[in-house]
Amino acid sequence: MMPNPYQQYQSTQIQTASTGDLILLLYDGALRFLGRADLAISERRLDQASTDIGKAQDIVLELLSGLDFERGGDLAVQLRELYVFIYNALIEANVKKDAEKVRTAIRLLDRVREAWRSVIRGSAAAAPAPARAGGLAA
Image (cartoon, rainbow, N blue to C red; front, side, top):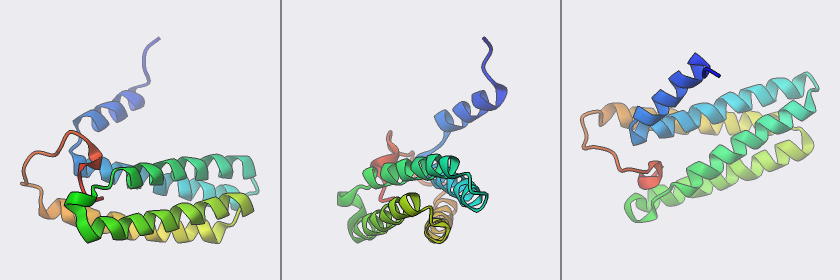
């Protein structure tokens, strides 16, 4: 069976991405799932909303587990607090199918994603990335 060309492209994109780009991909994935969840809630497709919120929760947990408190210092601590807040909001959104909680998570993740994107653009010529996405403060 031949792999789907889009899946091959995604796999190559992930395998060749820098640490910063991988983090952006995580944010993009979470935002994509939350956008789908918001739509699913409005259309009363609650099973789909639950699935998409769950996927976004998994991504937030991955971002949280990747924090490096030694290198990230106060920024890593602040991001931990933000990720925990977002994760808890998503739990509540999933239990209550609360679209406003989903939108709050979208707004927060989008702001952090844009800040992260600015950092990456500013350090495009930086040294090679660590082997693991969690090696950075975000």
